[in-house]
Length: 405
Ligand code: TRH
Image 1: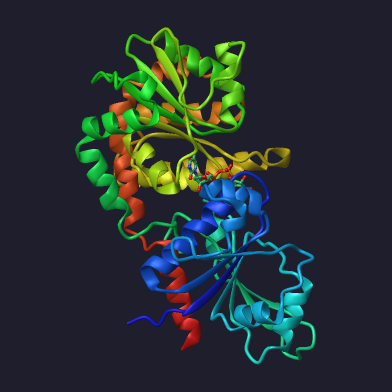
Image 2: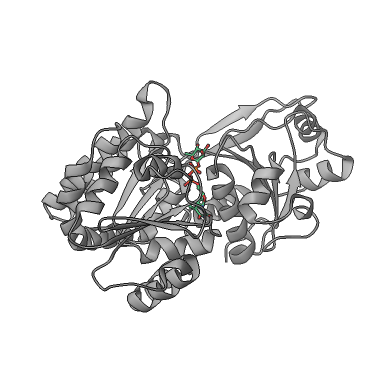
């Protein structure tokens, strides 16, 4: 049996949006639920975390939430002696996305008899260099300590030579159950999320979820859905996609949560920001998911439904290289299976690229929509391929085991 760390401190600095907390919260919950680890998640933006977890800010640290203790930190934070002791006595210390730990904590680590297994959990990328950098160690000088401490870079990824992807042990079963009774589950979901539609759901309805950044390409895509001869319902969680939706709708007042608007064959409904588990259900039950950033992108792959990835834009278009690396790795996998890349997957690839360049995608959606059943099959194969690899938490626990022997 693998010995797992008993106590873990995760430090998360929130850059923007929900991705940083999304990944850390998911990992924290899984370490508690599946490995019985005592996890404290340190966050530096209580207001955003409270919004994400739908709690009052004052309640965040009062009692554990889903077994996870939340603490608040900042770069100038001076932990109390009790807080320092608790962090230092962790067996595992995770710095998410290279957030720099505060000086006072580094000094306390320097004075400690033993430094915990110290991990820098990196951002997800499909680029090939990730395999060479995963589990590389850097030596860190700590104040007052003669020997340097070791910090290990842990890279999530899509291959067996990386840290893998976050995947709870029951996730795929949950998707199977939702998708087994798809029509019934959809009806239930829509009744909950958009009561204004009165459950009006036809069997040919194309159900789409839209969670992207502001986009120049969205208007054309929505226009194509409106012109289609089959109905489409686009569910938009409140947030950044809405401003582009608003521009397309040209309504005097912004749509609010629970409200819907109709343009031709297209209905657009604004839904609340869901819990992570409910968001998984939404992804599972849609025919097509527009996702973004890191975590929603991964979750849509587990949902085994065709997706468009609106990648987080970086300076000098660096993100396009990252995007191509993912599209290539997916393409290579279907070649490996001796399945020549189907026209539908090439069309999807083109759609994803053009969207991320802010180009007009109206014609492409017309072309893609009839191919959704075939794309669904391919998304299922990709999900199965990913599921053959151990998940990120399992890889992390295995690493801790080798380090503590
Ligand atoms: O919100 P994002 O754009 O986040 C990030 C951050 O901006 C980060 O700084 C950046 O580096 C990174 O992207 C690449 O996208 P992401 O990663 O998909 O995070 C969204 C989280 O919100 C994810 O955990 C899913 C969750 N979510 C819900 O829980 N409920 C919802 O209704 C929706 C739409 C999302």
